[in-house]
Image (cartoon, rainbow, N blue to C red):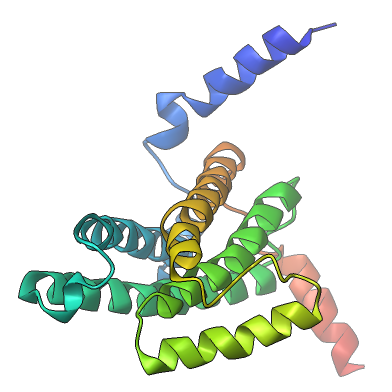
Length: 207
């Protein structure tokens, strides 16, 4: 019986294998546009991280007076829109194609958790803008969190929100996305439903 050391070695060998991350062939069903939505989501996240690093390095108010940082802020903003747009399309695609089949429930769970963490990550980004709109949202959201007993999350505290948006939540989100992609590479892309099941389901509905 294998011990935990050998099991961990085998798991790492599978995860770090060149064949896992750079396969030479792909299933024909995985070459359509709908199967690219996950890659587009991940690509948007990379742009988010890179533009966010530029903004964080120059300070949270630099985009108010620096043209280059204003451009980086615009890239960051539109990358957020693309990230959530492609993520929602990806979520719908994997739901309607039963992406949890074939021992892929952990992959589905990691993706769902990434979606949930992405929401407060984006929201804390809006809160550190420092304008009236962000301050109003912070106060209103704080009242809601207080009602839930989460008063330790002080949304009007710009320093806390900056740390949450730049460090805590992005690192958590990055770990979940990496785990999700790693599971996809290890387990493969879920195939479509068998044609026989689809025809049987259709015939039952017609009766």
